[in-house]
Image 1 (spheres, rainbow, N blue to C red):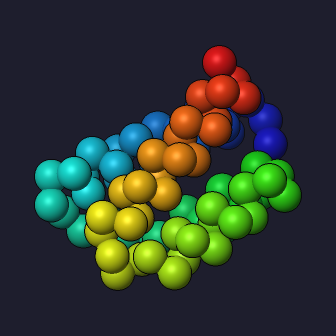
Image 2 (cartoon, rainbow, N blue to C red; image 1 turned 60 degrees about the horizontal axis):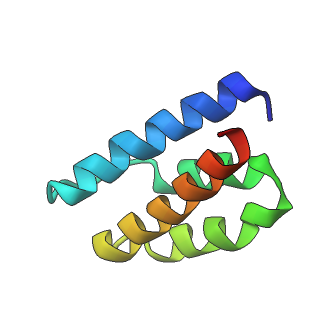
Length: 76
């Protein structure tokens, strides 16, 4: 995945994470998981966890944090 796309993905994750922390629901969880999976095979587990947690805001927020931390480590 290109660096610009990684930056876009990080922004989307951060925006959704902020919304979740504010008690709001987020849409497009399956699509977000698809985007995360395209980063590489090491993100497959996170993508599966996100799909499974789409109706559990607390778990979803935790998974988004994990992915953001991984992405920051890779691109940082």
